[in-house]
Structures are given as C-alpha cells and as structure tokens.
Image (cartoon, rainbow, N blue to C red; front, side):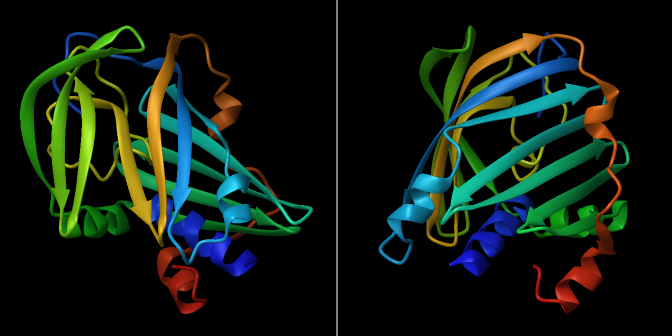
Length: 219
C-alpha cells in the first residue's frame, strides 16, 4: 500500500500562455476531488488532500502535499524553475527523505515526449473571478475536459507543465495516474508577498539525479 502511494506521488509530478495580466508573486488555491478505480483502495483515495496551494515568486513555483494514511504521514514538496526549466522533488516518507533533481536536459526530454492536442469550444464560465473557455485536451488515449483563461499568465508549475502548447492558463482540469483521478478547480488566486524560503531546498535529504532515481526504481 505504501509503495503504491509513493509511486502515485511520483507519477503526478513526472506528468501557460497568452494573457493580459502576468501573475509574478502570490498563491493559487485549488479544490481537489479524488477518485479511484477498482484497484485503488478507498482509504488511499480518502488520504489525499482536498485542497492544494501553489506558491509563486518570479519564475519559481512551490507546492506541497501531505498524505495521511494508516497512522503515517507522507509528504511531497516540489520546487520548479521556469528559466532554465528545472524541478526538484522532495519526498519524506516515514522518516526517509529523498530528493530527486530534474535538470534542464531532463525536463527537455520529458517535454519532448508529451503529445497533446486541444479543441477550443464556445462554452465559457467564471472560475476564481476569471472568464474561462472550455477546452478538450487529448493525450494519447486520455481525453480531458478543461477550463482555461487567457486573462492570466501564471509561471510554470508541476500541475501545468504537461499542458504543452495550451493557449491560456488552466483553472480547472483533471489528471489521471495509476488508476487515481484528481479534478482540480481554482478557488482563490491572490497576489501577495511570498517568503523566498519556500523555494530553498532544505538540508537532510538524500539528493539524486533522475537517472539515479530510476536505477532505484523511483520513477
């Protein structure tokens, strides 16, 4: 069970935009609704957070997630940089702290493998104060309904990096990995000062490259 949670966390991560307003610093809060297939235990679905906050400052983003299950707390933090594109994942599971660094070359390899197409529809609705257009995204066999605004430019984050070529910023979307689906909808977008310490990699983690993580089966 715990191994399944770990693999799922990794999958979410390893898997913005013309606008009039550029968002350089602050937070965006998403309501997260999780569901699982028949092979995903209900207690695992219930353990995932119902709210996810991403912090932005300049070209960096940070988000964290805590999973509370079977009396154990598992935490994952992700720091991304836009230029050059880099990502650092920090996982703390039962006292074992592992950090995986994805270099600019690693991220280019990941982005080159992403094949996605979009169909922009006429239907629109308001999300977190922004007018959003309905978009159907197709990634291989997966089809996803999204709502995207062109009125806001957000720095890249772990949740939007896979939407290559999207015309706008997604404020409602779903993702599927390992039989687990999360629907995310923005509930609050706030411009505010963010402590630079949010983006500093703390000590105490065993750091490794993506290649080293793959050799350990952490991919």
